[in-house]
Amino acid sequence: MINNLRLGVKSIRFAYGIKSNLLLMLGFLGAGITFMILGSGTLLSFYGNFMLMGIAMLPAQMIFSLSVSNLVLASPLRKRLQTSVPATLTCCNTALIYLMMAVYRLIRVWGNPQLAEAMSGELMVIAGMIFLIMLYLGVAYKYFGVSVLMAITMALLLSYRKEWEGISFRMSLFGQGLGGVALTALTGIGIVVLGGFLQYLISLLVYRAPMSKMAQAAPLRREL
Picture 1 (cartoon, rainbow, N blue to C red):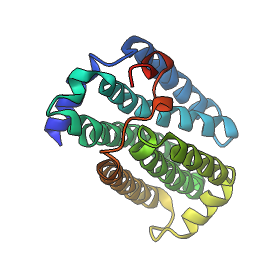
Picture 2 (picture 1 turned 180 degrees about the vertical axis):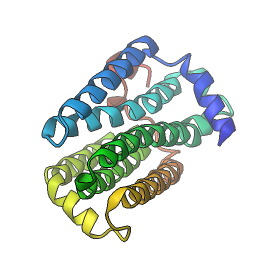
Picture 3 (picture 1 turned 60 degrees about the vertical axis):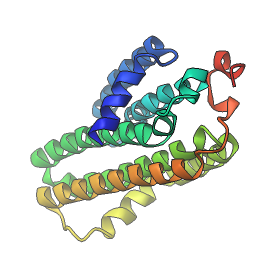
């Protein structure tokens, strides 16, 4: 895992659109944190959470942009750059982002214990969203049409986010209070790690399929 992370960090320097993607990541980070805090308990907060989760998708996108190069396609590192490396980067990034969102909610519950149920529900729904995003990334750059259907399914599920938040908390075995929220957060981290593993497995299954042109930026499509 460490080797994949190192390879991913080194490879990103040669990815297409690295400067624009980094600026986009910073913009998403600033807007996501602002919306999450200022819009607490509203739809604005949900959009902030989604922006933060979007940050985790960009490194995988940059890594896959390397695969339009004949040099990479002929390299013995090709398989890792299309399977284990993007999965590792996505897993590490989403785990860090999820941890940040969990700490924010733990701080809120520490000051307002009555928010424990709502915060636990939000954390479980966020973990589920991240899980679906990772499954999406496992197939998106090979079968773009299938990934579009997955994205539509995610959008439909998220339209009932309040219902999912309530269900997810009622299914929790951890009870209320700060300790219950902390255990919910740990469960969420486990779901994120599972999502990363499944993303890797899916990418192995579709590895031999050609890269999808529609999944790449327009200037790169003619290279495929």
